[in-house]
Image (cartoon, rainbow, N blue to C red; front, side, top):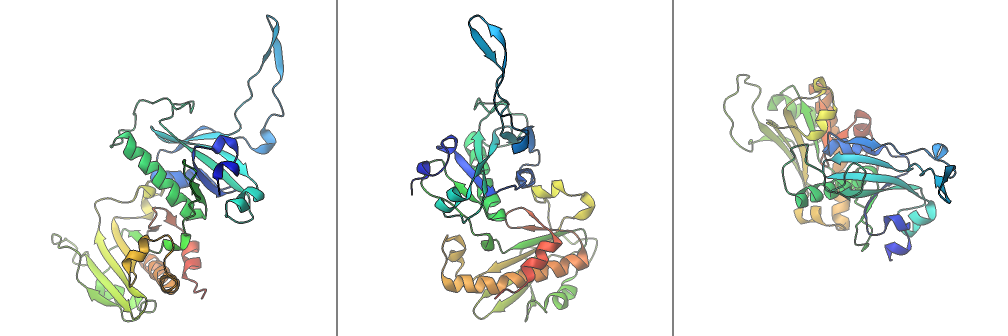
Length: 323
């Protein structure tokens, strides 16, 4: 398939994030770019002008009011922005292999000035890294955002459609203000992780004032499905997305609930084996149940492996065993 023959002309040659129609893109952006803000709000279809109108005569021509842009410009940081959305109808979605649904397309503009012209702006956010690394960060976010909401990415070279599998994001982390002792965690999680046992901490830390605030790990091994591990420790830094959450709703005590499949190389494959997919489908509800149980006891906020907040309702959905 040649993407240039399928997508609208303004999107050709652009790095494009494709989301389900109506998706609010700003919260997705704020998860990685806390300062994300609209420079220009997109117009709703009902607000869009039918046509430009003449406003007067000058010399021998007609002065025509320039039409207001109908797309928005969402500034991610000083070096990147999103321009859109361009609505893609069901025929285009089907041609892209993304199902019979309407989609919104957002073009990634890197090095854009305030007017989205592509001029290089002065850096105002103090972000580290050269322009290439900032570009890589923005493109990495588009893949994570597409995975989060069952969207896709159309690379600028037009080579293919990248539709990340949402189910591949299994791991979850609870960020809580409350440290739990390992002997308390084990009986809590055993209903979801049969055979869970206390293991060693990843690295020694100075003796804390609170004897319960010790790093630890709890692991459960499954004959065919790999190992699920809970690693608990106090962290020096928290994910960027927590800057969008009330400070009373999280803490620096991190409970990482992670899955290690029998063949870890399959985690990096776009099309893992059927055995991997079966194991993942069995483990995913258990990981969600563990995170939900710890959340009910310790409070806090759950973040997925893509850096996005997972709500309690979503945890409940993930915990359902749909096999």
